Image (cartoon, rainbow, N blue to C red; front, side):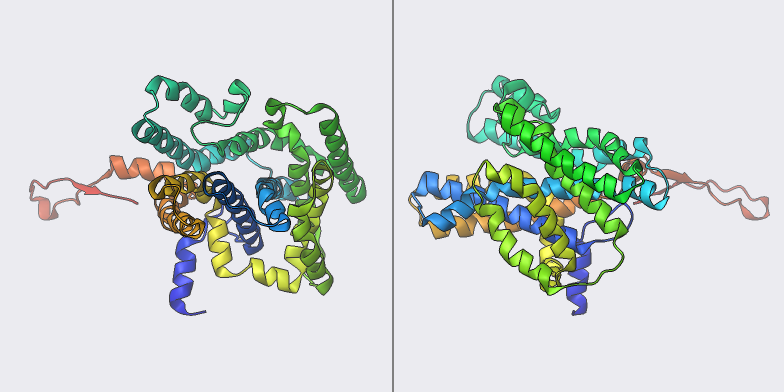
Length: 389
């Protein structure tokens, strides 16, 4: 890899708490965000431009929203790892104060600013009354819009899944107690059984918009992430097999082709197998570890926050008479321009766990004491302000 490519990769690469970078995870994030973008972009083209593809691509694109469930599995894996490492590898216990504080400092600033931008655009461009925006904005800021109004956020519709993520963050320390089970097989069987029982309960009783907006309706996907963390931490080797590539080749189309309600039962287990294949299939592993793939996957939070807004903005500025390919190109160009800038300026700095302290020091500054005057000669000297970034 050329040196300048390495510099670009490092400049855009996400900052992790531990400093360890797992390229496969960002590669899987790429798959998730790409499918969500395809879902919303195709929906926009169908609604405003009369685009209708044949049945197979229509089905695959229509189910692109399953990328959100792919994100849920990743969240389960990432958040479970430190808890699992404590119970299974005798590492340090997770500091819950730091755990919850990290969720706030890492995720809240990009989220809050995004909602404020969306609300401001609603008022300025759509001429929505301020009074009609404020309450919905407040509910969205508190991750309660679905619970209060029984529907997606009117400020940023994609925020519904972030409300579910927050519910999972609160549950994670409790769910992590499953790793206290010493027996590997009992622990893993308990996770698999819990996933299956939750699915059966959902099919029987979860039929309202409010219930679909809770972590209970998607808990099996987060548990699949916990199971994957268990497997990953205790794996005996990093050996790869072509069989896992075969599973990837057959399995990924199924993620977006399976019909409901079968998908609700099958997808968590299928995604678990496909994520394991990303680590152990030689071709799959190479694809999800490509630098460009991991860079885009690494900024998926920013892309997720803004992609729907940018697609809608492209439709607004182009009107409804443009060719669908033009709308697609402009939408993707906006996403490729705005999101990297927001990531570099807003999200990536928040990945540094010490950014609140550094920001405080930056604004306050610190006074550097003047050196003692030589030979007792007193000379007035202006205090120096040292800026620490």
